[in-house]
Amino acid sequence: VHEIVDVVIVGARCAGAPLAMLLARTGRRVLVLERGRIGSDKISTLYIQPPGVAHLQAWGLLDAVRATGAPELRTVTYEMSGTRISGEARWPDSMPRAYAPRRTRLDPLLAEAAVAAGADLRERSGVTGLLQDGSGRVTGVRYTTAGADGRRKECTVQAHLVVGADGMRSTVAELVGAPTTVSDPTLTCAYYTFWHGLHAGFEMYEGETGWVSSVPTSDGLVLVSAYHPQEEFDRVRHAADASYRAGIAANSPGLAERMRGATQAAPLTGFGDQRNFFRQASGPGWVLVGDAGHHKDSLPARGIGDAFLQVQLLVHHLQNCDAGDDQDRALVAFGEDRDRLLTDSYRATLLVASAQSRPQRRALLATVAADPVLTQRYFDTVAGLAPVSELYTPDLLRGLVA
Ligand SMILES: Cc1cc2nc3c(=O)[nH]c(=O)nc-3n(C[C@H](O)[C@H](O)[C@H](O)COP(=O)(O)OP(=O)(O)OC[C@H]3O[C@@H](n4cnc5c(N)ncnc54)[C@H](O)[C@@H]3O)c2cc1C
Image 1 (cartoon, protein in one colour):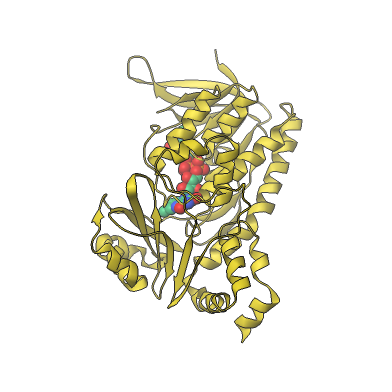
Image 2 (cartoon, rainbow, N blue to C red; image 1 turned 45 degrees about the vertical axis):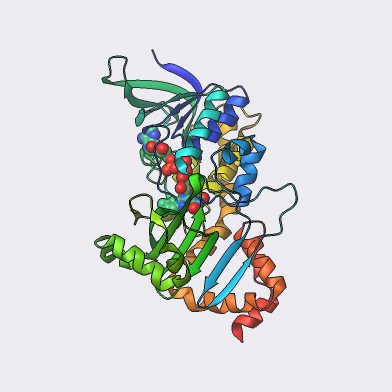
C-alpha cells in the first residue's frame, strides 16, 4: 500500500523547506524527502540580497536569521582597478537589509519552520525513481530511507504533485527528462574559507585576474572568496591554497593586507561546476523549483533569493487550484513567470562573470563613480531593488562610448 500525500518535495534547503512550510500552512499534506542530513553544510558564499531577506521577513523567519549572529549588512563596497564606490541601496524603511548566515544555521531553521508548519520531513531519504500513470503523468516517487533496524529500505509515496527542489544536479529533472531550455558555458570557479579576527564589511573586488569578496557571517567570522575564470580551474585546483592567496593578493591587495593579522578558521572549499541554465519548469504532475530549474554563476549572489522568489511564485500559482489539468496550467504559468522574472538577472550574471567583458565593466564603474545619481542606481541594481535596465541610462551609455 502506497503512502498518499498532496505534495512530495524532494530536497529540504532554500527551495524545498520554505515551499514545504508555505504549502503546509495552507493545509496541504506535505512530505519532504532529503537525501542528506539537516544541518550539513552546503557550498555557498552565504550573502542573501535584500529581496531574499524580505521573503524571510514576510514568512516570519527574520528573527531566527538574526539569532544566528549574522550581522545586518548595509554598506556595499565595490572596487575595480583603483576605482572604488561604497554605499547603500535606497531601501524603503520597511525593507530589511542583507544578511549572510552560515548555511549550517540557515538551512536547519528553514527545515524547522517547515516541520513547525506541519510538513513531514524525512532526512537520509533519497529519491531514486518516479511513479507514473499510463499517460506518463507523475503520480509519486520511490525513495530509500533508513528503516527502524538501521538498514536501508525502499519506499513509495503517491502525490498529486512532485516537486524537484533537489538542486542543480536534480534527480527529479533527470527522471522526468526535463529539457534544458537555455544553456551557457560555465564562466568561473570559486574558492573560499572563513577568517577569524578580520575587520571587513561586504566588499567586492575585481582585478586583472579574478574576483574577490568578503562577507561577514555568523560567529564573528568573515568569509573571503576568490573567483577565477573557469579556464583556470585545472591549474587552480592543483594548487588551491596558493591560488586562493595569490588571487586575493593580486586583485584586492588592501584586503590581503588586512588578512595578515587574521586566522583561517576552516579548510578551503572550492567549486568548479557553476552551470548556467534554465530547465523546463514543469510537466504533468511535476515541477522544478530553485537550482533544480534554474542555475547561474554565484558571483552576484542571487541563488538563495531566487529560490525564495520561485517558492513564493509557485505558492501563488498553486493557490485555489485542483489537482490535474487545473494544476498543470498553474505550473505552466509559474514557469512563464519564472523565466520572465529571472531572465534579465541571468543575462547580467553572464556579463559580470565573463572575463572578456572586464574592460567594459571597468569603463562602467568609472562612469558610475563619477556621477552620484548613477552610483545610487548602481547600488539599487546590485541589491536587486531596481532592474538592470534602469542602470543603463542615456548618460551611462554616453559615458561608456566616450
Ligand atoms: C560557490 C557557490 C557560492 C554561492 N554563493 C551564494 C551566495 O552568496 N548567495 C546566494 O544567494 N546564493 C549563493 N549560491 C547559490 C545557492 O547556494 C543556491 O542557489 C541555493 O542553495 C539553492 O537552493 P536549492 O534548495 O534550490 O538547492 P540546494 O541547496 O542544492 O539543495 C538541494 C537539496 O536536495 C537534496 N537532494 C538532491 N538530490 C536528492 C534526491 N535524489 N533525493 C532527496 N534529496 C535530494 C540535496 O541533498 C540538497 O540538500 C552559491 C553557490 C555556489 C556553488
